[in-house]
Length: 500
Image (cartoon, rainbow, N blue to C red; front, side, top):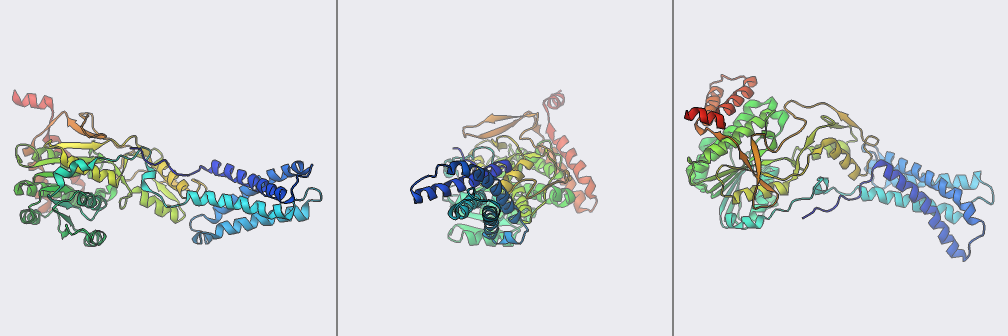
């Protein structure tokens, strides 16, 4: 299904052209009304009107520019939605009356009806253009591709009547997952998170859902996870808890390791011990050829799903899904850009050529639910997210959707890539390929390598042992995780050498 077309969001030159048309049209319409009232058209009136049509077009371009300046975020009048339009309209009307009554002589003056009504009509049209472009933004309108409506009803057999546990349940994805899971009739949904306020807000939003419960817990606390899983006996687990902001994880690698790596190991191990039927772990496109430490932690998490999803967990189907950037999630690029626009700018962008894959929270949650329906142990899935979108293009679209002109009403500053950031992300590496599934727009990632589960888990536990002993500097974490990944991945040539 295709998304709704991008709503009215004119480029600056288009807005100028529309203002000119509004100015000329306003005077022409007012003149026609005058003709209708008088019942006849003076023989020389059309000739006299033509210069006024051109002048009205130019004057309305100026009035439109004044509207833009008065509506610029951060200005005094911008806080009063109607004030900029009234001021610009009065200014245009005053100019027309001064030109008409004091500058021109008969017979080139306009009748006062036309001199007053024409600018009012033109200003009303210009104001309407800006108001139409400045209504509330629907996140789906920011995608440059059709929004994917995934058939989550096919997941009902997997989730209906089941006990479901969601880690990171207070987050943007976790809360959307809870809403979509509750829609298919589970026996219960337990949202687990350390964020007390977020859990309280989730409970308040879904207070009418009697099957929803919440639990404050740290996923990296393996003892707590084992006790929780043994007590609750969930049948389906969605693991969304993680640190996701690249610069923050880059600056705090120890906590990134604890939450993203040990947390995933803790949840997956507890699920296997408790005999959970299905576990879905959320990953990211940053795990592909990881450049950031956050990407490294998620790469290890993916490999753990493959490692634990084999013969070691015969009763549990573990899988993972790779996400792109989720539009509108807390701390993501869209809310950040909107705050900067509303503050009057400047908008800060890392690089002119920075590009990302984008998806909505609804698409992300639907992909997770679909992954739970697949029977492939250790499977890794990804959504067809279309082409990458330049961050600069996204920022300009947001400004236009707010009725503002990029580079004029709000400026853009380029601040350079932050630590751990790449210019472009990828959905799979060279030693992986995408295989179609029976679900449209969902691919399975098929690796050309195997995972040595023992080497992977021993490596992770070794890093953790050094962390607990206080024997690790922050700068050592990236190299250690890369070494763990290199030892755990067994490529075809390596496997052949081992057999020999």
